Amino acid sequence: MNVSTFTRAGSAGMIISGIALGYSYVAHPHHMAPEIIAAPFWIAIHALFALSLILGLLGTTALYAPTALRAGRWGFAGYVSLFIGMMMIFGLDYYEVLIAPYLAVHYPQVIADHGAGDAMGAIAIFFPLAGVLTVLGYAMLAYGWMKGRVLSRQVALAMIFASFAFGFGLSPLGGLMAARITAAAFGLALIATGVSAWRSFEQRPATA
Image (cartoon, rainbow, N blue to C red):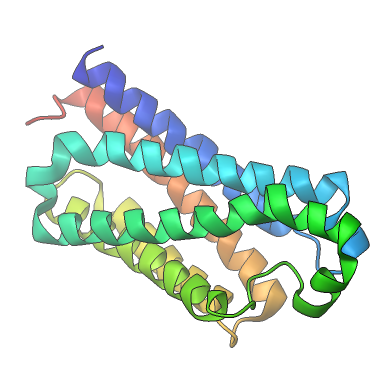
């Protein structure tokens, strides 16, 4: 494996992650009743979201590694932030795929009382924090990539704007429709980043 293959794989991961993220948020069930969380569709949607997290983090790592020096301090701070945030989010998604459906079948009162678990105890604090770390991380990394001429100005600004918009959509001020729209926009920004990176690494060495 050489650097070109590595970065192309990262670009492809970003593209697939963007598609999976956008669809999983747009199709996410609105209600959190036990029968909804126990249904196969709930599991499939959250498994798809887990895929978007895995490929997104792997893809971002593959693109950041050979461009770390060019991305500078902003890129480093952004990568560390999004890494921590996405790992935290994956923890909750693991629960939503493997544990919550079991509880919904065998202990439905737990689900009736707490829903999918994102407002359960300390999770009510750490889950929003994970979202903030993730969107701020991508915004800072995109800014670092723009300054280092890794991404075009247009694509980097689109990622920065989509990151902050997605953060608003996930906040209590956003609401369900805003979350879906901004998630789709963030997914498109990931796709654009992957496509742009693929083209950029085709044109010049990634370590330049």
